[in-house]
Image (cartoon, rainbow, N blue to C red):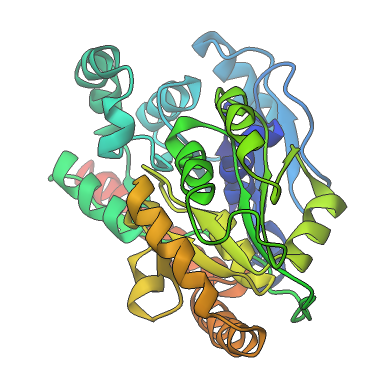
Length: 372
């Protein structure tokens, strides 16, 4: 069995989507003999080395599909197509390959969530109803990565099978946190959707502003919010704006911070929050992060995308101490290990893939029997 992951971008800004496509590849191969491929558009940067095959398609045009199928020697009986995201060529290719008899799994990755659909509203409305929705109706199954997203997708596609399998992370060794000062980390794109400017505006009005025992660290590539953040920085001595951080620099940042803040307006499922828990950070997240399980289990603090509510939450951080945070981090990591680590997610994927293959074969056998 092969799983063919088709993605439209492979740059760091698109980390959440392409990482979701590859993070279980080694486990799927070692535990279930399932090999993984990632198909990239022409000119896309290479992904990190891993236990998967990277293939750059010659063109996003549908006319390239026959040669690609031949070159990669695909088999519609044993290979599964998984497309990540919406609005781009992966959906078009998934639709076409479905017509050719392939199993097609769609992961919208939060792109069909209500808030996201309101951005460029009319353009998306028209394209969704005239094209995208029609193509997605051909999908064998639609996979949600968060419980609220699953419920939303079931409303959008009442006749489709929608299954929830979240994203996950590789569990690392527990991290011992520094105790000099409390660091609140925002680690994401500096985009309006993420609520970062609201966080900064709230910080300068909170009890934490200009306090030497606290700091707000903002890291991520700019997507329209950096100038607004810079305009506020002169009101604070304990906000640090780092810009994009990746690799070892990102790991070191996670190791030394204590809280992970994401007052987002919309997420599919924020893998970054899982990373924060993995490194021992206490999540401060909005309900729009689509991770209600975390709050229900008592491992998250509400941080809704509203300045007054963020101020209230930030002020409550003065009640935390390092010992309490350490104990809470242990419990949160246990929760993570039970539900959101690579072996758990890979097992769920394998169960789904095997079920779809078995059903596919049964249907083919039934059709063949009817011919005789």
